[in-house]
Length: 290
Image 1 (cartoon, rainbow, N blue to C red):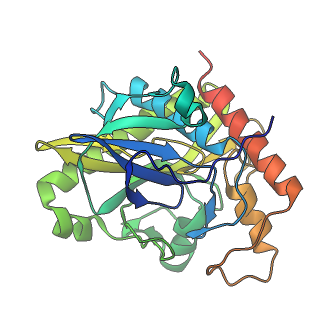
Image 2 (image 1 turned 180 degrees about the horizontal axis):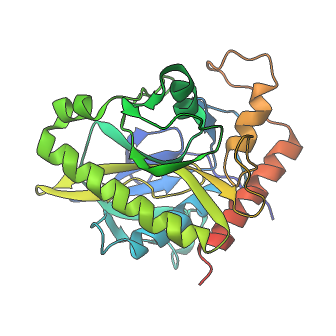
């Protein structure tokens, strides 16, 4: 049976509602994160949910949190608090209890391939976030080394903006900025190698970090189809747009419409919803394969 989740829970106090995740006060110094089936594109939440998307995102994140805890600690306390709770069975699989950390006001983006806004910036300037790159790169070119390219963290409806590393250091301090950069690159390298062995190229991804008792930890989500570009490794060919296992399929559809990329977003047709759900589920199956 198709399951959709995009509602509000009354048992806990709502702290924040993001594009996809709702965060509740759960216990002293702990929060409950519920991942809905909402989908956003171009920083706009669309009116059409994707069935089971929240479960897929939560399970992929939990997988990576467990795999990468040796690289950096994370915020997870209980990865599936309602697995045996009949009263909240609708939250099973899509909810996680986490430690409450002080979120950093930047997003940590790592790019292994040239695409998206990075490619547009490269074509204008020959660099990405002020980092010079070799001449002759094309759409989907693999970069000589993964690039750390931080961005601002925008409110719903606003757009994130790429910023140089120096601007990030101005915001949070050089020492902390270096720790974030190094952790993000280590996480990406680990995840990209793991995924490639299972037929997925992680072209780029976004991490969020926080501080807990002065310790840097990984928060929010980790290397999901919402926070990353996933490409099939078979058939990879630089110089053109790649097929994907992420919401790029939705973005590509929206680009065919006469829409100015501001709210409210357009509804998605049934075939786009079904294909997107299929792509998310395939990414989950491939990534978590032993």
